[in-house]
Image (cartoon, rainbow, N blue to C red; front, side):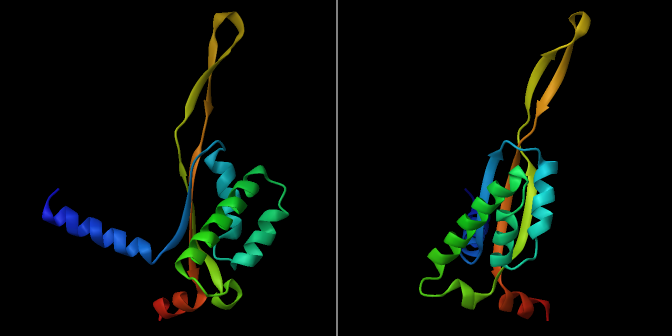
Length: 138
């Protein structure tokens, strides 16, 4: 590895230490369905987002709720001794990327076959303090 790559890799590693995030990979749900749930909680307070996810009837909301709990746990590990209620955590970013697609074949009439695409996705949640967010916009 060259010097520039090593320096850039260490910069990325240091910036990740200051971020509070969680990633869910290869979730067997269509990205389109998952984005509906992700759009619902983007920019929301963490406690309010958990409540909305808990009482939502969509199957994807259970997975996002579990991922949000993981992101909160990651925040607690990096901020020992600080209470969640005092920190005013918000869901700064949440995005859904397309994962791998499993291709399956379903028999069709007259010897033909239809292709079925079983889609999956990757979800990333980034948390931030509300006070940090205000200082960055000014």
